[in-house]
Image: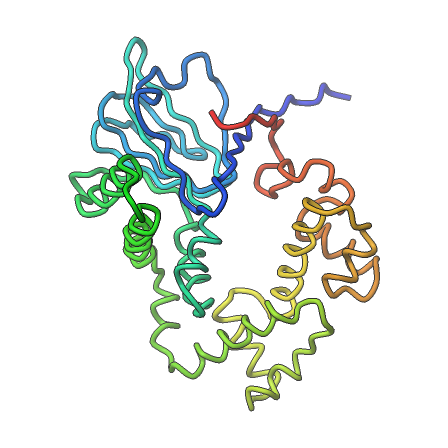
Length: 313
């Protein structure tokens, strides 16, 4: 039997968001440094990272792609996306960063329109962005504006920064719109409203026995038509989405409570433990018990790596 190939190392850098905030800034002289010195592995974060380079040159790995960075480069990197920054040998670079709890931020800023928040979230998390100020001056200016707002920390600065960041995300979401999404968004408002109402209902009742035919009946359409429209818009069937919401809720319970796995299964709407375990393993790749021990290790796209955990940089 051949020797097992050693998995590449990857580091999970965890940040604790200040209480009551969805935005955190890393500013100042600490971030003028030789990036990547003696580092031969990628890392990822628990929040979205937005970075802006003021000076310096080097290379950046975003997943499997390598880019050259310099003054005026900015990046938008979704949470759990592997990356690293390497200054050229013998040089220093100055970056400053924003970390954002995008899920909470967009749902808070979107008010009651969960459909819009989910659509924006799906788009801005669809990829990592490597951009240059000369090509996108308005977006670069918006990032510098937010960094300066956070630096000055005047009265109501969090609210001011949130408004500027929401504007930034709106532009980014429009830029990432796919042809399929354009076609779907041309459909009638009734269909969009139908899916939105369905998502709201699921988020409020996922712990109950939800039947697809009852949801369709409430919308005065056939079950078959409801399934087609929901799947076209969400890129997954309604039952698959319901189970995803339930598993997300179960992960929160596993991470923050001492409830037994059986109790969590019941709280999240699963009729039997076997159904819960089967769906959890299908979505998360491991059992609930294993996930509870090390939840940060089991993002599905990161299973090929030997991950260790660090707090911050």
